[in-house]
Image 1 (cartoon, helix red, strand yellow):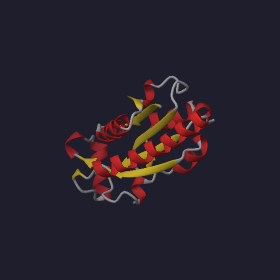
Image 2: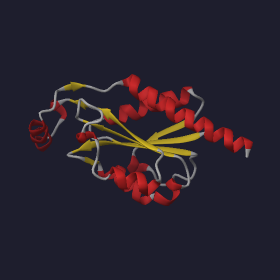
Image 3: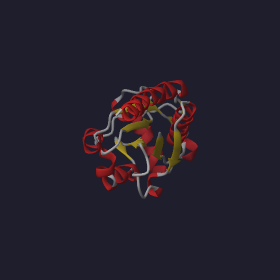
Image 4: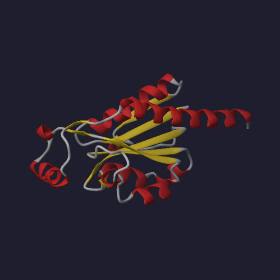
Length: 170
């Protein structure tokens, strides 16, 4: 199946999560494109879409939110999965649960959402970002779990294999 993975990432860590997922999906036989949300003009050439975003101050980045709004009708016509990555060292923590998540899931009828821990490198942050991080008492370092991303991507691939089987049978 042809899969689009589109990721809004401010400093590259969330983009790398998308790349890890793409590697797993490719290993499972899927044709995967990874693109920035602002570059996505059309999703109709894809059988499935994965949309990810970094979470800042409890929100997905605007390019990911905008992509969902621009392509909502076409996204609802295919399987969609969402993922988030935030500063939290606990994947289920509130800081990794964007405020708009429920609406986003409903808008595109997403099959699921997964939160992943993020990477915090204060050296690459703006002054405003450092101030926000200081208030959140976030721990410096790379807290991402590549194995967790690969397991999730395997779950997506399993679901896609089920979709492919039903298309062939139907």
